[in-house]
Amino acid sequence: MKKATQQQTKTHNTRLITKTIYDAGPISRAEIARLTHLTRTTVSDLVAELMEDGLVEEIGYGPSEGGKPPTLLSLVEDSRHLIGMDLANSQFRAAVVNLRGRIQHCLVRPVDDLDGQAALDLVYELADELVASTEGSRLLGIGIGTPGLMDARRGVVRRAVNLDWQDLPLGDLLEARYNLPIYIANDSQAAALAEYTFGASKDGSNLVVLKVGRGVGAGIVLGGQLHYGDGFGAGEIGHVTVVEDGQACRCGNRGCLETVTSSQFMIRRAQAIAQSDPHSSLHRFALAPEKITMETLLAAFEAGDPALGAVIDEVGHYLGVAAANLVGALNVRRIVIAGSVARFGPALLEPIVREMACRSLQTLAEETRVEISDLGPDIVILGAAALLLSHELGLS
Ligand SMILES: [Zn+2]
Image 1 (cartoon, rainbow, N blue to C red):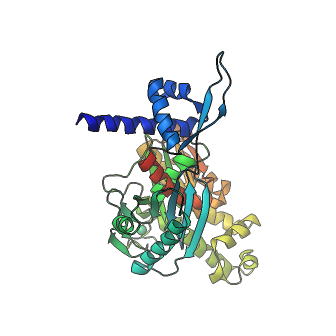
Image 2 (image 1 turned 90 degrees about the vertical axis):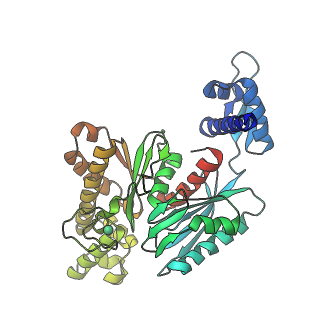
Image 3 (image 1 turned 135 degrees about the horizontal axis):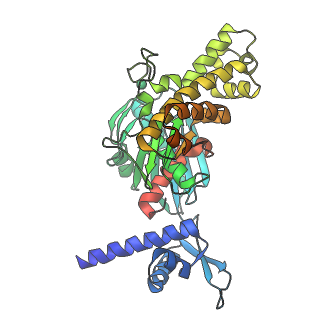
């Protein structure tokens, strides 16, 4: 028993030191001891083991404070690799990522109408290729961001409508096939963890990521941890009704937030504009209304199409309603907009902030910063990798 406790303490201290070097490096042993409140001997012993393991290296000397200049330590970011996968869009994206979230090898495969076993086979195909590509380097495991409702503890996809997965034990299947640690989260939750770990203004504060693409959902980080909710459905705001008797939604309900904010909604709106207005700038960028994609919308928007401005305003309005509810329920001070719809940037941000301000307590709204993520299309891959970093090395 005593031995087990000693081992636990050692693991805890090793993780603490690794995290300190990860967050604050290059850093001296003395500074680590000061920040972690561990003794200098403990720090020196554990650093020696981390160096032996290749995870940490000495990279030179810091400024002298009178005596001998201190040796600085840094994390070796390519000493371990992770595989991150994003299954949430019309393409599956998967990549090998290093410890700093730098993407080193990325694969993209169209999903088209694949679902059920065929979609699972595509996951295997991507993982097979990436695992093979990392031969010779140390692979920490596979992290996955999947759409739908997910039991993150057991690695079971409870329900993913688009992929026609129900109670799929994805974690067990992948673990048996690759003999590696597997971690899975919902795509919005993964996005939130990516923002927390790799985002531009990572300051350790609570945050909500509103991910708006084909699907719409929120990921919530509170106290440095993903908040999953009692049934792992925290942040499933995409299927809350916001329009009475609105459009039918793929979940079976009507007027969900997703039906008035998703990329599919914007594309349908743009198609209607192109069909009714022969002078619409959309015609310049798409051969026919049914060929309109998000790229077409972005091009037309950049060319200043006013009709598109109104669509973005409408989407921003409903996202602002959602943001106001999140501020009221959680009082987080940072809301980050991600996903393909976030590519409209300030034009989308403006109506969100406006609507949030007039629908929530002024003081709370004023203290809440709403911003656009700068992690781009790789956000879920990075979040899936961050999930692994957090579980396997205590980082993030
Ligand atoms: Zn719905």
